[in-house]
Length: 388
Image (cartoon, helix red, strand yellow):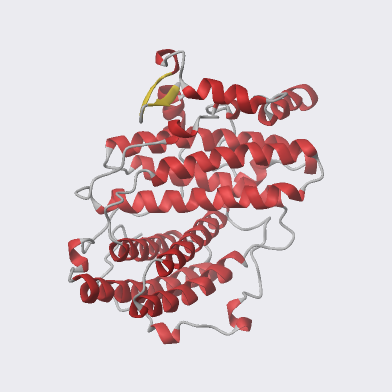
């Protein structure tokens, strides 16, 4: 596997040649949910999330400028990325249930965040990733109970032994006052890996939040609907804490360059690690598309702001984003951080929190007759003798 990404060494596909007909855009053969490697599914989920995040952000950028040269460039990039997103998302098969997809979403959250945390040079940002990691790890367990309860499915089969099922920070102990989701941002002087990590994880978590909001109503079972509502809210907390890491002093065009290089970086990472040759070709094609998007963004930056893209983005970026088992690392994080709680934009042990910590009152406010995650766990212990 090539370990370094060099975004300026290769030429991309010309933008006008990137647009596809619908019969070529929609892949005729989605993946086989029983046979496809779990990490191939994870890469599909991740890249779908990155494309969605980019499309939303570029639309917002267009609404905040009156310069039609910028608007035109954004519209060209967006159209290509909209088609990329459709091609990726339509790889999912029609016979895959919402809960089966959910298990993959949480496997992405666990092993992506673990990989990012292990390779994060900013120690304060690493703490934020480690903190969120344990919560997604716990969500995976709670959804596995729901999968068993509603569909008789086994999450361990879907995970293929790559990711464990065990307690993290209990889901019902994750509800926090909005102020307690605030974090300190990185500095402009931090390295490119810190910047790309924040973009990647935020996009992935945003997609998860939106998926749970939009699909939790797919079930008739009221407890299932409540669990999706509960975890969707915690995912919103995650989006907040990760986006707080961004340095808001970036200009819109600087941010555009970072978004485009991050997409290329992630496609390159997928391309280097993909085991399915058919899907690897998709990652490779989209990688070369993103190199062109990066070139367009760099030209805008130079022409509109007089800034050289090389002042933002180095010629070499490493390490890559890799989906791989992180069991030992996660168990270490559980031992060291399970009692962490956020207070005043830092983490302290639970026993160090003041009695008036805002999240204590918030937790009581949203508890109602009981947290769905805890009710499902109690039922799993009682009815299926499942460890929890």
